[in-house]
Length: 280
Image (tube, rainbow, N blue to C red; front, side, top):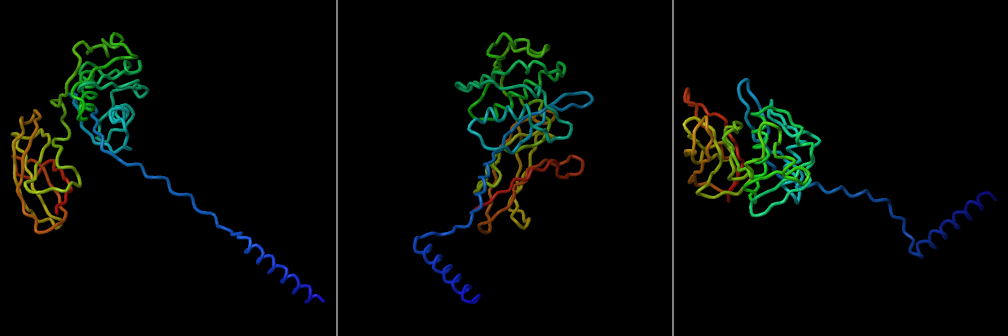
């Protein structure tokens, strides 16, 4: 009798399963949540202050940040709240400073800060460079050539700025004369760029006798070409440089551009900047 009950139960179960299958009922296992999209990154240039026992100066840093539709605002927020990576570098603007607005018109950027911006306390030399740090950061963008400031929508509220250096002579222009670090940076070619001969090289340097050297290597370290150029000013000043190098790659591949200056003492390479590139 017990065996008959088991058989009957099994038959009922099979009939139920067939009925459900006929009705189109389908059990779908739970699907994992799709991974959130990875934000696209972009290089943003900012200028921070640094001091020696006798001088204040600026350092230029490239920070990789989430891409934004408002690069000027992104750069200023990084200048206010970002963490300097150069040893001894520091921010000037108080961390609670807010950017209330940025208006860009025919190359002039007018930045409206919250009143907290006026609380900086870095001394006269630091104040002048603090202004330059903002101006240089913004003029890294191709659509900005000059910069003016307002505070809480008013020019008058910020005229005395931080006490020693005011805003009476604004708008301010880009000034790299007090940017001591790094000694060399390269603006072209970009990292990972596909290059061709002649390879055009541009950048900024603060080096001995303004002489900037460069070489192109393949992936195995073989030197494909070398060259040098002269910056518009030598150390202790800073100057722009541009040059070009003819090369014949053995085949499509990758390599690196190295830009540096040679020590007058022993000829050793100094402040080498490495830019990965590729060619077809």
